[in-house]
Length: 263
Ligand code: 9D3
Image 1 (cartoon, protein in one colour):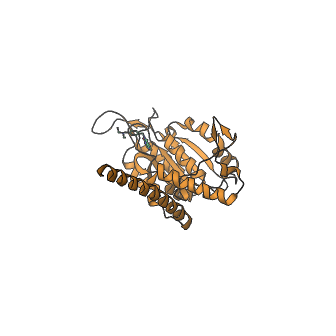
Image 2 (image 1 turned 90 degrees about the horizontal axis):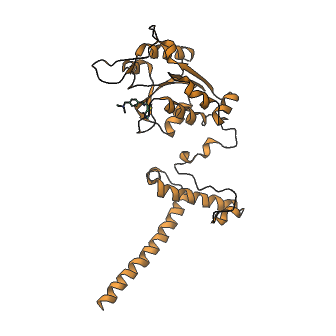
Image 3 (image 1 turned 180 degrees about the vertical axis):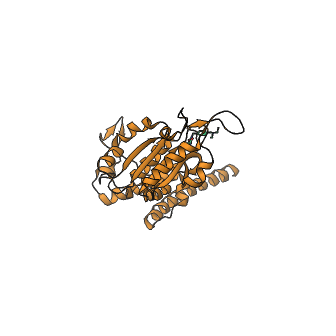
């Protein structure tokens, strides 16, 4: 995968390219990264990338010519690449979009700054407009890093084999189970006994239970969307029976107290 980032702050990406899984993916040639300074495509003698908005108002707008020049230079080198504008108006990013983007051989990420980019850039030169969520950033750079990060770890071999992306919580529609490591007792809190038992099948079942419980408690919206398999239904059904038992006992006690007071 070829990532080309267009930005007026290319230095922001230097530490991002040089750490962890991204760095290793570059070293192992799973990804190739280029940062391009949009200012290099500015056409006036002040190398301006922004200008005042037509119609007046505060704030500046990114000029179309430097952006168009930078985008065309990138796509001419990579005709099959997808172009992505990072903007608060874009589609909210998610794991499905990450998977779709991972199937490209190249991505050109365009980072906006100021109040926004000239609208006429969007029509012909942009395939995707993406937002990373409903909060306000100072520019598209961090959003571009998030997309590169999420897409890179989906590329075969980029995680180094020890940890494949197929095991992602989001690919089975559930949050991940709880995790524990040494020491066995930390500040008086013990690790669940079953994880020390060595019973792999029971451990897998415990983890699925933990996943279901966490998803129900923290993200019931995910559980509602999920297609449940036989084992998942069985675990949830068991909870239902246990809850019903508790509630029946409770209701019985309540009506008993009521009858006692009447008598
Ligand atoms: C005053 C209106 N603002 C729109 C909410 C203007 C504005 C604020 C911040 C325009 C651009 C920006 C910079 N943000 C991004 O470029 C951006 C972004 C974001 O702010 N939130 C979530 N995803 C993204 S992707 C790019």
